[in-house]
Amino acid sequence: MDLKQLGTRFGGLIAVLLITAYFLALAGPGLSAGFTTDDVENLTTYWNQSPAALVKAVVFYFSPSYRPLGGLFFYRPLFALAGFHPLPYRLLCFALLLLNLGLLYLAIRSVTASSEIAALTTLFGAFHPRLVDLYWNNGTIYDILCFTFYFGALAYYAGARRTGPIVDLRKTAVFLGLYVLALDAKEMAVTLPLLLIFYELIYFSPVSFSTRQIVKWLVTNCRLAAIAGVMTAPYIWGKMLAQSPFTQLTSFHLDITPSQFLISYGAYLDSLFFRDHWFGEAQAALTLAAMLVIALLLRSRHLVFAWSIMVISFLPIAFIPVRAAYVLYIPLVGWSLYAAALLVSLRDLVVSSSRSIGAVQVRQVVLFVLVLVLLLRAYRVQRLRMYGELTLGQPVIRSTLAELDRLHPNLPRGTRLLAIHDPLPHPYELLLLLRLYFRDRTLEVDHGNANDGRHAYVMIWCGTKLCVFKSGTSGCSGC
Image (cartoon, rainbow, N blue to C red; front, side):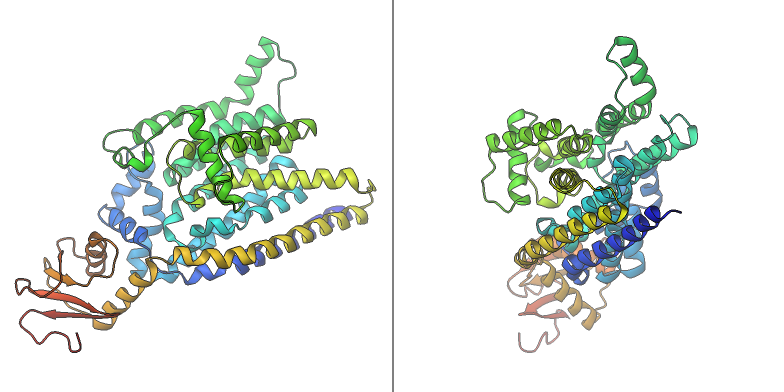
């Protein structure tokens, strides 16, 4: 190993450690998060399915089943092992988030052949205050797992692609397996085949644009992307069947128009850049157009590929009502790569072109540290402003679970109880929570303002104190 390789590996290790520390410093408080109403609903969904049914849904990825990998890998096993103790859920989420940083680094390094651009991209993509749900809500496990297999597949593809188009059966099977798991995690994965075509076009374009060369290029370079695309068709069809949950929810109804694309992109740009209704349709269109023009003027394949990620991976959320910004977890990689590649290009244009090992490494260290300091300074304040948002619902569920643990009520199966002063926002949330807590699918809950004497058991909140008692007894003192 020569001095340059040693310096690169050592610098890469230091960068990984700094990015990990940076991520944990800003996102780490999310380890203390509790359960949300999303968790209660998701746990109920998978608790009502057998492990065999979840395995079948993962294998038959094109079924109408709702994101089965999240149930099989996360909710179902953790609920069996840890019940309503939130820390194991949070630890697994953070382990995956850290793994994703490593996969992002590997994917971008494989694509760009630049450790510096990979490190800067990972630094930019490691944390964003508006993606707060990722760090505080278990319900984003679908996005986290999708990222894992999406960029795991991209890293594998780009790494294997160095020796030529992928025709080996084993490599093909590994890539397609990773892609299927990404689809099982969340619908965002459907864009990967299209992204691979752009990757091939940008980095391995045809020698000439004659009909013969284009056909040859399509057959050899886009073979695997075409197979993945064919596999995607039944997946999309399955999600649009009447029995699919997505067809029942108005929040997933499509409006496929250029206007809706720009409206959605503008709304998410507002989130990324901490603006309030600034990016309208025109601003969004001009921003994307200007970024593409800059990439073409600089003749940077990396910038063009970054732009492709920004646009292509955004498509699954472009034509549905706007959600919280955590859905940008995958598209944010495009913005991160664009920022990293642009900074490196601009620095190399204005800084001395000395190619000595020492000078190159100094330039790389200075840029990395400068970006790290600026991000820490900018995001520290924004982080403090954002964290209160996701705690809504968590304190109520946390206190309710704590009171149930304190009381250890023993309710017969099939109990129909009366809930008085239920603090949860929606009546069905308490029903789902109690069914999970008591492991009783037959339990029923009615709501009222006073004991009507017609229910065998009564559950009443006196402020934050919970009382559970049998009708006809003295009830709760102090209520």
